[in-house]
Image (cartoon, rainbow, N blue to C red; front, side, top):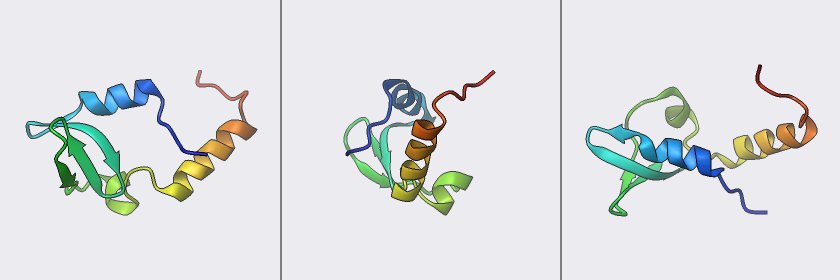
Length: 75
């Protein structure tokens, strides 16, 4: 089953700009700008520097946790 990010997440990602580059999509170490250019994210943020964006093991673990603990909510 393909993993699809919720629209609200995509909107949040798309709203971020990095030094004038508007990021529209991210996968692994790469990001794509609004013109479709594929770039390597060298920003050094903790998450992307360690495992990249949308790492399959992390996506799978989050998906399983959400399915298992669907009654959990933020207060």
